[in-house]
Image (cartoon, rainbow, N blue to C red; front, side):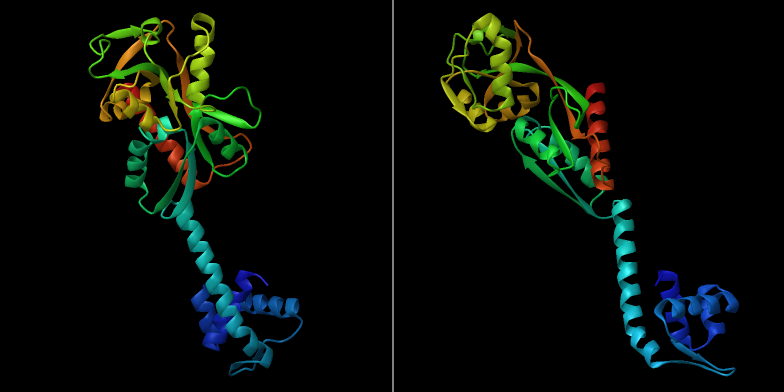
Length: 298
């Protein structure tokens, strides 16, 4: 049975007239008659009894009538549901983002996205960079945001920002009044950072190894907010991506430009190379790119 055949049958069954049903469906009587005959041929029996004066349902037609109503209602509901999803009148999208992005930049983009598509639900997974890659690769989320991954055939990276690490020091530190600080000056103080396998921790250790040797850590935590509070309370200093400057300052710490070496990494969108994004995911991707471009111009 096709949807066209069911609609034709339902119209005739309700009107009990081929002429009236044809008008309702904008079909000629011969075309309508052929559609009904094709349905009866597919099902293997007569559904309607036709005379020169009236049309009536056979017992099999009576049995099909409530089923046809339900099938067409379900079809119409499914069609409308998909239409709303394609036009972003409703829907859902999941995104995984590393904490430095999720807690600082992502809320700004989500506010813009909500303004455009108020009925689309967004599920945010605030996880370390390695888990972002894993969740995208295993199709647990459609979008990921993290540091640029090493060469991968399964993942596609779209750059959003080139981020650099900045020093984080207590407000009353002798370093707080400086315009910039070197790693040599920063590492003379107790160092606070994220625990492994955080990408921030691994990047710092990797880039500092040649010039400064093994990174000596006094305190470590899984949360950037905890690192910021430790610094603000005078337990030591840290270095975080510049995306976190606002968060660190809100926690009571001071951020300073960091040189020698200047550590930079690209941060961007991570998607599966062979996966076509849903309308909701594509809409969120477009908003994230737009926000990044606005930030770069600003």
